[in-house]
Length: 467
Image (cartoon, rainbow, N blue to C red; front, side):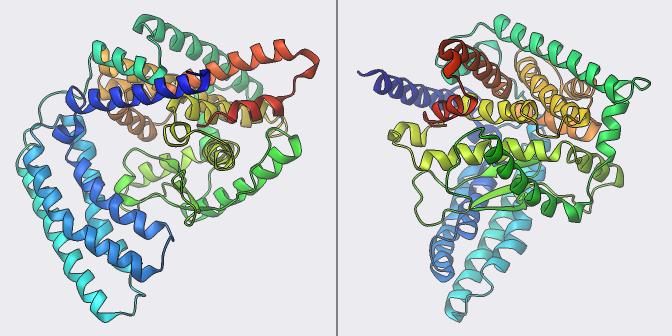
C-alpha cells in the first residue's frame, strides 16, 4: 500500500479492535451503565431537534418513529444491565434524571409550532409512552443494580495498556506513560508558581488562582460573553496568520443538554463530516443549575473566569476543534480520515492551541492570562495521571479530587467532576500526550525548514491530515 493508504488501514483496524475490546472485555458499558440506554434515547431525538436538515414537521415524523422504538430498547437495557459500580451509579442517576427532564419539557417544546393536529396527537402518544418507559426503567434500575452497587469501573493495567496501544497505534509501557505525565506536570507546575509570583509575590499560588476564579461573569452573562470570545478569537487568528481559516463560520453558543451535564463544562458539537444540509455547529456551555447550592454555583462559574473562558473557547472552537472540522470539510481526505478521528490528534491540537495563542500574543502579555492557560495545562496533566491511576493503581475518586485540587489548584466542585470523568474516560490523558507530540513535531519541522519555516505553514500542513 501507499503510505497514506497503509496508515488508513492501521487506523481502521485499530478502531475495530478497540470497539471489540470495549464491548466484549471492558468496560462493557452496555452491561454496567444504565445511562447508556437513556443517553441513546435522548441523543436519538436531540439530533432531530438540533439539526435543521428538514422541515420541522418531517423531523417530527422521524421523532415519532424513533420514540415508538424507545420503550423496547429500554426494556432490553433493563435485561442487559447486570451490575453497576458505585461511581458509575452516581453519574448515571444524574444523567437519567436529565433524560426525564428532556422528554418532559424540551421535546414537546421543540415541536410545539407544528400545526398538524393529527401529527401532534401521534407525537403526544409516542412521547407519553417514552416517559412511562423511562420512569419504569429508572425504577427498575433504582430498585435493582443501583440499590446494590457492586464491582469496579477500573480497567486494570492489562486492558488499559491494550486500549492505549490501539489509541496510539503503537505500544507504550505504562511506566513510560506515567513518567511522561509526571515530567509534564512538574514542569507546568513550576511555570505556574513562577507566573503566580509575578502577579502577587506575597500570596501563595493557589490564592492567586482563586482570585482569577472570582473574576467571573454571572450565569445569565455566560453565553453572550462566550459568543463575543469566539468573534475576538477569530479576528486574532486571522490577524496573526496562525492558520489558514476555512470559509465556514456557522456556529451557535447554547447550553449543554441536561442529559449530558454531569461531566462536562464546555464542548463542541459539529455536524457529521458528510453533512451537506444541517451545517450549523453548536458550542455547548454548561450553565448554572438553579437547584445547586450557592457554593457549588460559585465554584462552577469560577471555572469560566474572564481570563480562562476565552482559552476554553480557543480549545473548543477557534482555532481548536471547530476550525479543524471546518477545514476538513474542504480537504481531499479519505473516507477513513473523514470518519475516524484520533482523540490524541484532535484533543492534542485543541490543547496545544491554548498555549500557542498565548505565546503568540493573546492577552497582550497579561500574566493572569498565562496563569489561566497554565492552570488549564495542569488540569490536563492531572487528567493524564488520574486516568492511569484510577484504572490501574486503585486511586479513589475522593483522592483523585484531592489530586486535582492540590496540583491544578482547582476548587472542589470542578475537581470532583474531573475525577468522576476519569472513571468513564480512562485515557483522557490524550490532551497532554497529543500536545507534547505536536510540540515535538513542530520543533523538528522548524529545524528541517530553517529560514523557510512559518507557524502558519506548519499548522496548515498538520491539519491537512484530518482530525
